[in-house]
Length: 253
Image (cartoon, rainbow, N blue to C red):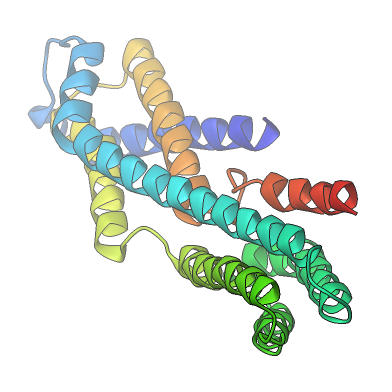
């Protein structure tokens, strides 16, 4: 909440400064003698130069977030399925596979999640553990028909985890395309400068409207920044799916 208030305040200050400096630099003879509705001007400018780009960027960012959350849930479900099926395997495969599943889950929660936040990438150590898990499943003896059936189901679940992890790696590195961010910043600049170019004089009402416009723009840019990377910032994919998986392991045991 503090961050949002700070950004809104900065946006208001920037909007007022741009307007007042621009109005003083712009030739006074070009300024309008009669003030039009500042609110109507702001609304028209936002509709024309800003809303379309903002809407597209927000939808794209939210879609990336939604996909990342879906991939995380799929990965956690695969881990729980693997752990559950391994309970029916004979030792030592039973203990080894369940131990690797727990180790992988712990590594994702303890190290990988913060790494995705800071560097937008996955942890090689967790990948090594997942590879060991896949190798352990491949080494399960398949002489017995019952064990062979369980082995096949475990392998399917591990494959689900592997594919979901690959999707999560792409999600962690993905962001809004650069050309859209450039269009967004250009639109922001046009919205802030347009009142000056339109010739409005510095009055109390225009200063208030520019401050309000700055608050809106600053808040929108902050939310777009939070949606830019699904695992970074203030709006991040929750860890709940993996935490629920940890709880499920204890119930299965």
